[in-house]
Length: 158
Image 1 (cartoon, rainbow, N blue to C red):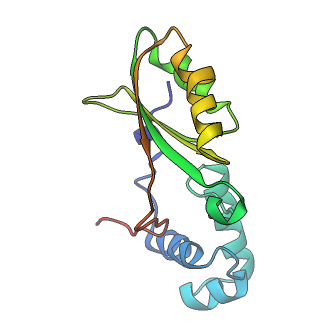
Image 2: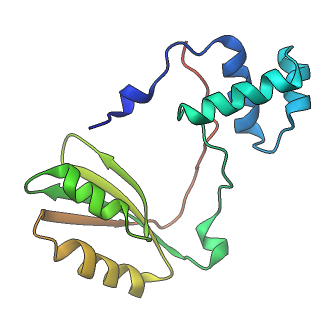
Image 3: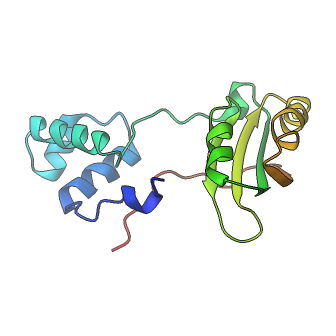
């Protein structure tokens, strides 16, 4: 199993961290603007960004707000699992409604974030994909009433 900590690259230098920070602020920031700020040539910045992407350190994506796209029901599902946790996590990660799967310790074995068009679809999803799975011992559905903060531009801890 590839663990989250296996992906961490402790060798990121100051320039790579600056590039990542700029892309977190604006994923469409030009290589020219980045090069001026970090003191490298544009091709050198492009090469670093490409390397960071290939290493899995960064992804450059458009982050959407599901509610503005017709998906009004979001929930976090806390699952207690019977048997191999990775098999269930892999199955759930393949479902269109699932946007986040994480292994946890404590009350739940897995946390699964889902986005559905409405509460009827959420109920159907939980009934058809979670409760009927023999690997699921228990599920707690925590329906989002609102999102106070959602941030993707966290900094580096030194």
